Amino acid sequence: TWTTVWTELLTDLDFYKGRCYRIEDVPGDKESFYAFIAYPLDLFEEGSITNVLTSLVGNVFGFKALRHLRLEDIRFPIAFIKTCMGPPNGIVVERDRMNKYGRPLLGCTIKPKLGLSGKSYGRVVYECLRGGLDFTKDDENINSQPFQRWQNRFEFVAEAVRSAQEETGEKKGHYLNCTANTPEEMYERAEFAKELGQPIIMHDY
Image (cartoon, rainbow, N blue to C red; front, side, top):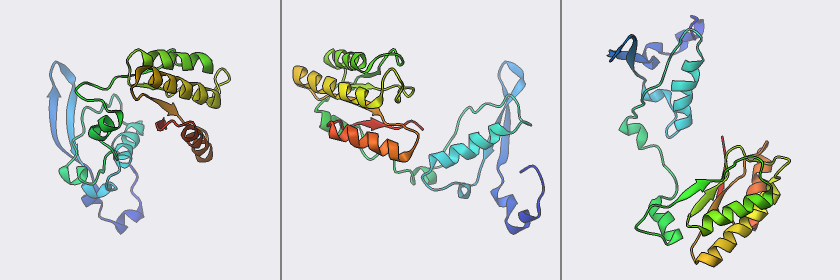
């Protein structure tokens, strides 16, 4: 806070303050500067990138007193990185599941992202996967709009994935967007994807 309050006496603010330890000129711009700021590790929950970004970006960029502020880089100490578990499966596991080695895994987001019916959407997924892609993906904007309800999309996509796998003899996948208004709705969509035999889902947050 920019205001002094008596509750500051209950903690050690000097310890928890961020510190600007270096300022450098921006080459070719006399009115801009690089400010290097360090924060104590104790300010952040272990393994929580969300907590770090909320503190470093969310709060700071919300201050009206600061204008024309831009985040150029973040450097994480090894002590914090070791607390981040990372994804449960790495690229080796993914390649083993797909039985695909020696080349990049190829994928794309379906376009146009809005306006396709469920049937047309499924056809595009099928053409992409049959044509050589390993994965296709819902755009974050695709949820359950009037032109394409989520159940309809899930069913046509599942059919497209199965057909592409049968014709190519390869494992294929599609990222089904299960994002919804409530956690209960998201669980419902995820369970429906599971019933259709689709192992990949995504949540946009």
